[in-house]
Image 1: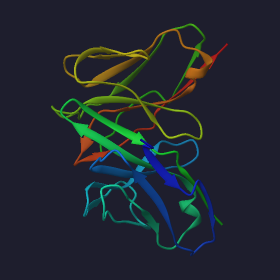
Image 2: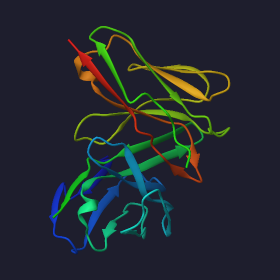
Image 3: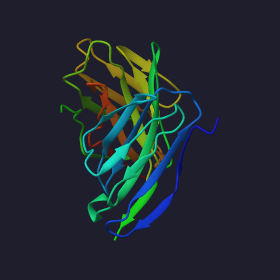
Image 4: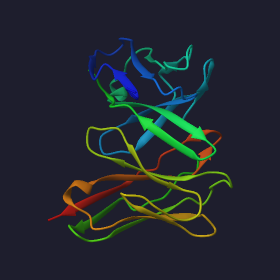
Length: 114
Length: 109
């Protein structure tokens, strides 16, 4: 199993540009999330999905869109990038059943908005 | 949204036992208490999880009192490689998994 993969690893955007951060998991987990982490800070939840076709907002959803057309993929779209969106973005997949509740995180995407 | 509360930072020396306590007052009856470890430039990774009493694995122990409003992560005989940020996750809020600020553990030689 590859686990959770994210692409790209690094990205530089100009203000106003749009882009999509890709996230995929091969563990057949229904629940997936996107977090952002600013320097020296904890993780903040952007959006999450409890299954294909179902998404919901987290703590800081403004400026981001998500969709979940398949169980495996959960892309995050930046509509019009702003310098305040400079951050490291982590995607997570959640194994949630009676005996365990564990999130598996991807390696992250470092985004810089100029 | 209610979050967990942990000390912002802790210092320790190699070979010591480190205990990090987390407060999660709003934990729901059926929620697990989970601890994650994060190294710089990496995503968090699962360390240990429990529901009540004590859980031990090859990495750490987790102590949970009967009221489940707090938990303590115990790292035996820490080494330099245990320097990381440790997060506890104690409660879902409407299905959302919200992280707190975490505890930055610095292990010195």
